[in-house]
Image (cartoon, rainbow, N blue to C red; front, side, top):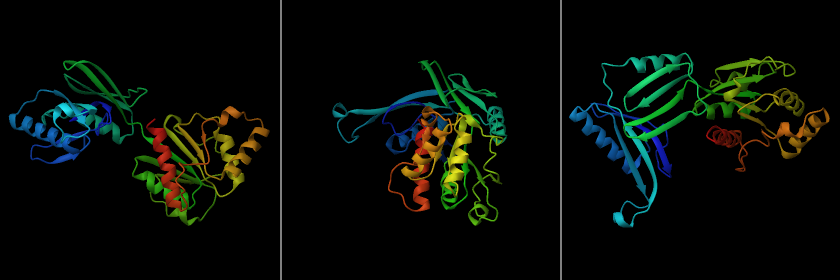
Length: 297
């Protein structure tokens, strides 16, 4: 089952998927609650009947399911495509899985005629729906584009942020200019860790379309140096840790060096959403929440 469209406050969002196996096992979710239970039962009936036709169902969500139907208010809806998968035709899934493992982009096309996969295809949005009728539609899903988090600074907050973001499907890269740092050595969530010279980061490759960059080095001077080299890059998210006073001081210094006001428009600093965070773990959660907001915008 695949959610191809949703409106209002429906529990399932576009792209949510769930598999109902022949032996009754469930994998994934299309939003939970009463709606999901009903859709699971519908899927089990389809399996029992051996119907390999693709089915579209639109389900409404109501303010209170206990009320008489005439008194209910629709608060949202979601459109679900049922794809009975023939185990004798797994080629599309094998090709898709192979590209995901190689970290290559591609596009899955779902339609009334089946599922297909196109390698190295890119689109601006992760999901696109073109719907005319239940007999004429397509849903396109971009895969293989990984959100990458680049952290400059490997202190305690960096370690906590790496841990938090590892469960949010970010690929994490950590940089520092200090040898022998225990929080650097103990970071087991980063896929790469490098000791670098902060004065020369222009040659560090950043996947800019999906780059989330956080500056949290151990000195104000280092933060300013790193920021000055990143402001001209077009990044998905650029943030710097520090108090309002420190941030304003760094911005004033860079303005005096010839940077323009507009170059700071996309800078998230002070970093994170305001939740009165104090500990490294709380600060990490506030930063991760802000990153999610940008990612899902």
